[in-house]
Amino acid sequence: MTPRWDSLLINATLATFAGDKPYGLLERGAIAMHQGNIAWVGPQASLPGDASSLASQVEDLGGAVVTPGLIDCHTHLVFGGNRAHEFDLRLNGATYEEIARAGGGIVSTVKATRAASEDELFAQALPRAHALMADGVTTLEIKSGYGLDLDTERRMLRVARRLGKALGITVRTSFLGLHALPPEYRDHREAYVSLVCDEMLPALASEGLVDAVDAFCENIGFTLEETRRVFDRAAELGLPVKLHAEQLSDLDGAALVAHYHGLSADHLEYLSDSGMRAMAAAGTVAVLLPGAFYALRETRLPPIAGLREHGVSMAVATDCNPGTSPLLSLRLAAGMACTLFRLTPEEALRGVTVHAARALGLSDRGTLEVGQRADLAVWNVNQPAELCYWIGGSHALRKVFIGGEAQAAA
Image (cartoon, rainbow, N blue to C red):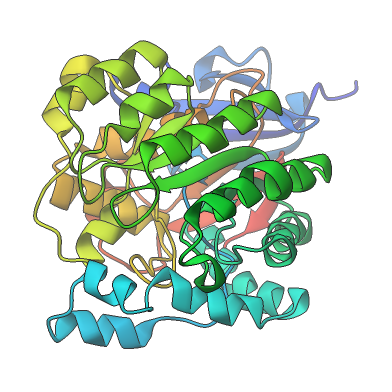
């Protein structure tokens, strides 16, 4: 008799993040995978037959916790060099804005990224991606925005695509042309915004390198009107949008991205009640980035109670970047979201699974349900909250399944 499934995990504690139970928890559960998708999930006692005859491979997990593969929905993983010296400057009293206005910050990474070849950028990004994967990440987003010219932005996005292929994981790309003014356009803002909207974005989209369009809407970034221009161009090209919004001030960026039914608004420390209402109405996900809050020693918390009250879905991401969040553990980001932002462990874990998937426009992952992509993480813990409870360490992950294929933990 031919087994109906490729593989079957039994004696598992399943954090499905489906249904109404906390964590969607199912103890003494079983989950089957077939042809890359989840084929069956439920109590082990309800399996339709003897486990050994149902699947080609059967594994007893001994009660280990299984979650969906983690999803890092906001990273700047591809860049040249690093900015450790700015870390030193900040600890000696300089502010993020002072560093940026003095030619540091994003612009300094632009210089290093422009100087790097595609192979060099790939070689530098690869260990960062491996670090995220070692913590259970099976899907991640990578932004451009450190090139600020067509050739370098293209190179960054090509590296992001290459990482996905090399590692066998899903990589979603975001074009972040409105990240900072490049030095050569310092006195020509209008010309640079036109370049992004009329040349860079259409060219990169036509090459299949762009999954979404992002911008940095801030006093030290780009205005609402400039952001609106690139969002209008994205809409013409059929691309979804997302936004760095309300990190350092309230410019109503969250309401703007919600107006475009954007995937997410990210950071949000200065988010207003009207912005929350707009996000809730549009279904725009709030992406919380505790790594940047921590690294910049910020004191203003995102309005978590308001986001709960308005029913805005909250995702959590590393914001891995060289200047303000050199964070290479999504599990640590989830723990920081609990400790610093007061999320519950369940909220944080939903934030790196089901809500992170929504922030990327992906409906085929983030929960353990029949028909979902079989991206799973098996953890050496007894309860899901431990994934946020432990601070650091590499003991937690036992293995992952990517599209139903088992991968040993790094």
